[in-house]
Length: 140
Length: 432
Image 1: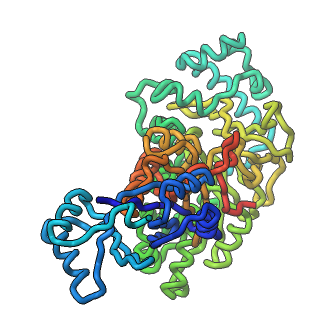
Image 2: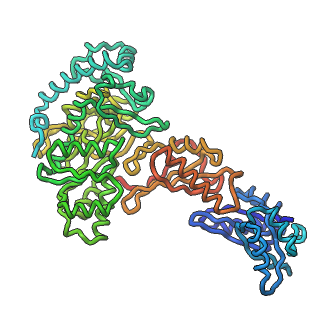
Image 3: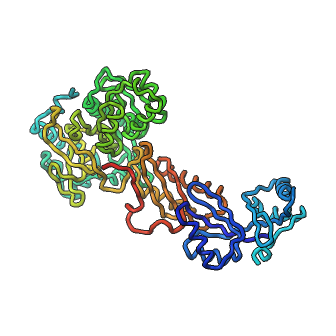
């Protein structure tokens, strides 16, 4: 149970991020969540969007390095201990979190997680009683 | 002071006579001892007897760096290995080094030439000289070292790497002379300022070379350190540092003409040029035994003058070098060809052969950044993997060129596609 994340490699130069968002806006693609991992030279833009396939195609056509990555969208309630429940499950099975960021869009509240072993993480989180969003639920 | 007045102040007629006699012997020797030269001369119908003096020099074919590579490692040696006392090597474009061998006599002459250059800089027996070129296969360190010993001064073999220690010893020992690359000396000057010890430095003169630099940089060194700075020229194929150097009048670099016969030729037609015209420097080694070179094309661009210098020396002088006729770059004293980087990138699956080299000088030290396009399929959404990838690319390039590089990953197809290598290189250093 994964959702497709749109990952875009962008160099740290003026206007590059603006060009990405322009392509997405023109294609009528909604950004549900966005996270930017930056180094001194380049950044990795990670997004959950309304139509990942279409977004990737449009970006590649415009010369961007865009790819789709499987990530987990864990539904989290707005209360104390929810985040810990998730990290505790992953930690107890020695699964590493490569990166994560929050999503709060159209009533959905989730943590987007990339784990070292995606399949094992999905099983563990489900077994632990957490709810995962599917691609359809997320984008639909 | 002139180290060897007999040789450095000869009349032009005497010099031509000496050079002619040595050239005739040289041609005879290589014809009979080096198959490469014999075949090359036979191919153009030349017999050793056809060369009767320097006026016949132009009948002889050129020798190039490619010839050294194709005869790797010892193909151009003119004596059996048992007579070779030392070997030096410099990096080449194809991963194979250019190898040179010296007999004991060659090493003596090398030391003699360096001793002349040190004397030109006004240093003498009572001086203490730090050699801060790298010691090893590179000719800079050992070449300078034995020159100082020959001259009779005290040598401190610092090599490179620890600037603070170098400065501490400079103060504590009362060092009066230093031999290193000009950019490194400027870096040393900065660290001296940072340490606030300028008044404890007794330095009088520096002898700098192994990389291109400008007259402005020389003046900057003189001003910052309050010393005389001198330019020394050489290349490992010919010998190493000491082929030429400039005297107190800084009116060009005096060539050790009794050992090295210089010519300037047009960089495209290879026709000889007259005094004052800029072209490629071609050198024939008149006395070298280990690996004599006939009309070796240095690819260095300069002009020559034969007039007498105010210092009293009569040896021909080379103008400050203005550049190279090939795409070789000299970065931190290391010869780098863009094709070496291309070859390294082609060896890896993860990269395309599209790259850009940015050479710069930051705080007087050369830097090399290589921008590399990464194959689409090797891209990752994880920074850790990308960092690992760029470290791997840096390692492979470093292995190929022997120089630390900074690798910058760039977007695929972001590097301009064009013919010609010059566009692959941006050299931000200012030499003119």
